[in-house]
Image (cartoon, rainbow, N blue to C red; front, side, top):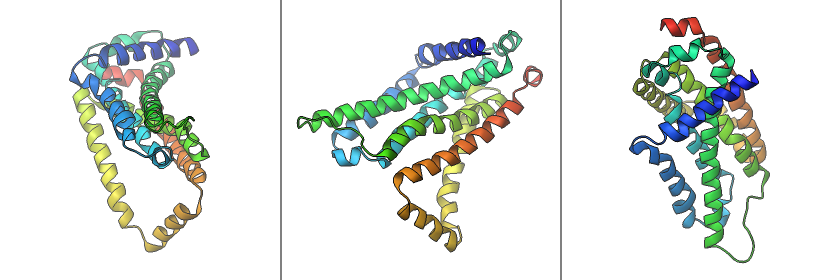
Length: 246
């Protein structure tokens, strides 16, 4: 499976970087986002604010955003280009095809996130240079850098694959993902205000009494559990016979 996985991973990576990202005006959107979040925003931001754990949520969500631009193409694009049957007829195992596509999109999102962090770090150091290099020092920041993009990317990638497996076209998959994320975001925003007062007090105590590192680990644990549940659902849904019939 390792050789097959690497084959699919490399195939998907080349398509993401050289083909999908090189076609159309949308190919520049990730680079524009990296420039805005990695250069223009840090340019006017004080170092103590930039090098904070909360600020790292921006590049973390950036990784999730750029993944949505490519993951919808994972299977819906193959179906639309009439290459899905060829892929399914190959000797590649089911797990290799599935994991290779997910891993390639996660790697793309992680790369964009790290590029944003590195660009921001360089920008802040150039603007505020006083003879010493400024970097992240707290444990929470390094936890978010290490765990945030891959875990959030895994969540978006698995959801995107589930949607792409059911979608007839890439546009349909993209629209479904966009509507789904809007529903989730509004559900979280308005749902939090409808929680019982006891629950809100309990969450408030956690936010104000736990350290940022503990909060980061707790959030990572929850997202990891969701990732594993979604991955199980994707593995159950990915069946060659059903995909060919669809």
